[in-house]
Image 1 (tube, one colour):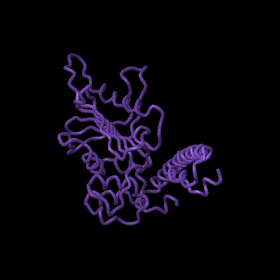
Image 2 (cartoon, rainbow, N blue to C red):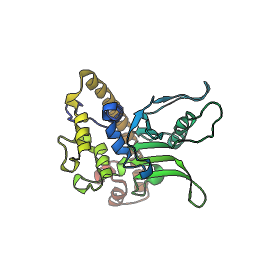
Image 3 (cartoon, rainbow, N blue to C red):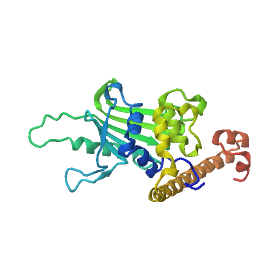
Image 4 (tube, rainbow, N blue to C red):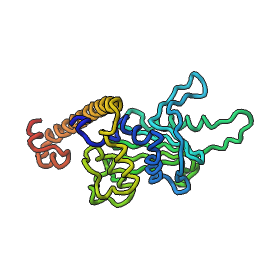
Length: 274
């Protein structure tokens, strides 16, 4: 389906994510979403967007370009990113990126080194390799000591593995559930679901309606959606080829088609063709 045939934007595209969450008129959407995953003491009442390109302290340092970078009214820093596919050294990249909002807080002259909290929020369209066997989709990572006590509570990494969210509209319970449902299904919807009648989602659906875009916005969205679909196709193809290799090895070891099908998700016809 063409983007122009969809009613609502895909929030997992670069254009869609920044249109819904990275513009001043829609910052209430970002605030509402972030408040579902932040600790109570850091709930946001207001925030301001900062430049998303960050430079190191000297010309030899590399730069970082975030999807969104914003600062809460109390000084907290938030890096918010959509990650559409696995990436080598993804965790290293997250740590590296978090160093920029830490460094920028340095003050010239005498300084007592007091820092404002820094949060890295990643909305992931993939599952971590070391978490494939569990159903935990929200990960909050902190610095802890050998007794698992929080050593430093001003640096947090929050990751959401979207593929693990399987709830239907009827199963939505919390406000957080509703946000995850939006991320996964917004572009497939034709009308606002009954479970998403909250005022904040009314605002979101209005902002996401493609018919209201300017011609320039439509063109930019089409290009962004094409890039997203191309990337997704590459990832899906790689995953499918990997599954087929595993199935071939199972077949060579004498496992039945029904057993292989149950373990890999491939149909028995697909297994026959291997």
